[in-house]
Length: 302
Image (tube, rainbow, N blue to C red; front, top):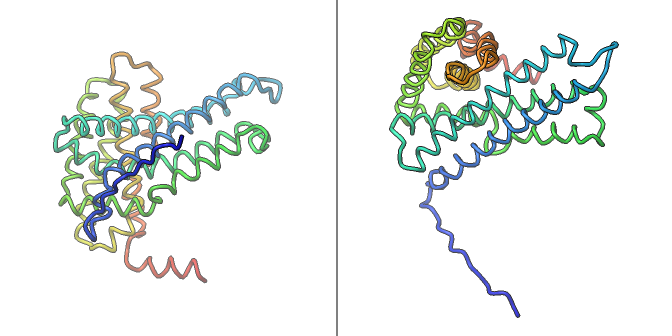
């Protein structure tokens, strides 16, 4: 008997409204991409952690070498930061889909979707690469299956928008919301930090995030008066800054949880030791001035 034929009716958007009509789909697929990035980081770290309990070098197990443990700990901090960013996106999406999202939630979801996707995609490549290195030569041998993890990770910074494309999308959503997405961002980060004010062990991390947030606010005020070209050159570093500050705030908030461990506090402290406000430090060196664009082109095509 011949199988019944089914047909699917596809609806077309109005001319010029194609991207807008698939905006929800883009949000979902970018979140899926971010989930895949966090999962890749966790998988390679788990494998490397187990390998460190079995592989002997210089007369002792890898786990007994402080330098090796430092490297794995840095990978762990990156993985935890990525995981919390992804879970925050899922929380916001869940509120939107259940009809519980506030205006602040909606603005955060719009801003953080491209930010988290681009940042975790780049994180995954770096962490998986470091993970392969932790296996020594085994990390490069095809039969182990490890090289395929790095190849798979590389697509995460490409699919559904490369890093630069998504950085420009961040600028687009800021402009189209008249800055309201940034207002929501600052409001929520400050609320996360406020909850940690009574935890003295987190004070250095809170100070770092709060200082970076203030610097970011100043940068945005200055950049707004410089024109679109200035912001476009700063877009990538701005997106990285938004991701690092937000992840720091989430790690701090998690470390305040009543079930948090001392290692949760340690992870927050380690994350916040890095350059959280990359865009300001690059601004100080003149990276976004109009004179740099032709110099960049000349450097590439000399």
